[in-house]
Length: 103
Image (cartoon, rainbow, N blue to C red; front, top):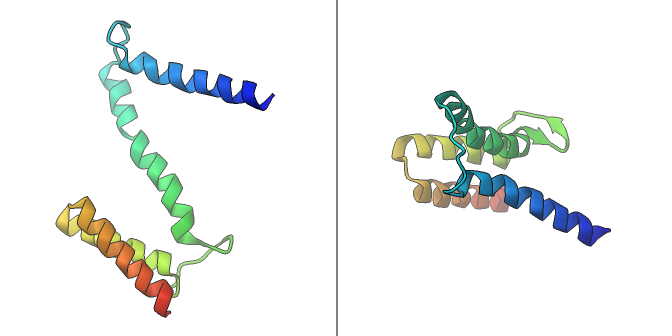
């Protein structure tokens, strides 16, 4: 049963991706649909990072004692100023490491 579920989920995911990538399929999205899809990446990323940053032990908490929040603020500021993904990732991970190690 597990193998059948894995196979069917693989088939569903592959077919949903293939529809947009296959050059012979006559699937064209209108401008409104393309604009809506442009919001999907930020929405998914926000759904991933927001609970990590703002929930502490399952409860909403915003204090300067949480290394995740401090690192996220620093990462946002660095990304805004430098617009460089590598610099932002390295500096924010270094800050997070230092905060979790020494605090």
